[in-house]
Image (cartoon, rainbow, N blue to C red):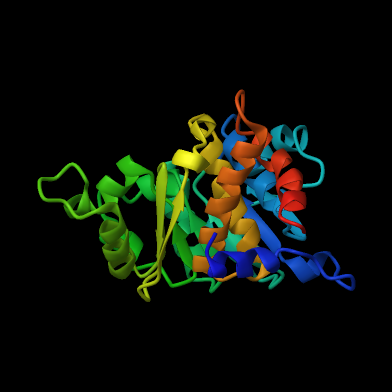
Length: 280
């Protein structure tokens, strides 16, 4: 563990005089009916990692479905860009997550509002793929408070000239560094070796192999939980690079703590044991 990572872990503890709004309010944007599972996973991850409040925003027809599955995560009808703009008039929403189960059309509708809001924003899954045909349009929206979380296929679509499949391709470390500089966002390039790069040149690596191998993360929904972890840390006040690096570390630690048989729902529930082991 690097000294920088140890310092970030030390900031995870909560103050004796804190209250829920001391730790931020994360807004997770979900898709329509039948598409809410991924966003619910992200919301649970944001809550477990310590965001003071988490709200799931979905179209009105999906409210009943999500209400039946959620208790401590709150709900808000967010049908379109205008509704999101109204929601963000409340400054207490200080971090957003877009992508898991959202659908391409909804992502393209909401992304400009989210990324113009000045909040920390995690862009994952459908919100990445929605811009595969025009990555420059996505990059034009990004800020240093944005975190892009591509897996290998998504990375190749957004940064085709940096794809590891090309002859003479750059290393993953260098590809992530160039991608961050080009996009103007923090890029978390997922895999057994996850590389996190910021547009200011900072780069970190989170290993999930060798002594830290976590093969159980190869399961549906684990990336959605990671997006939620990052969003929760943004809500708590970590900057985009810090949130991405710390979330990647805790994601692996949660998988290792649970072990074989892991499914995505288990990752947030493994965090309390991880926190105790870290002395929090």
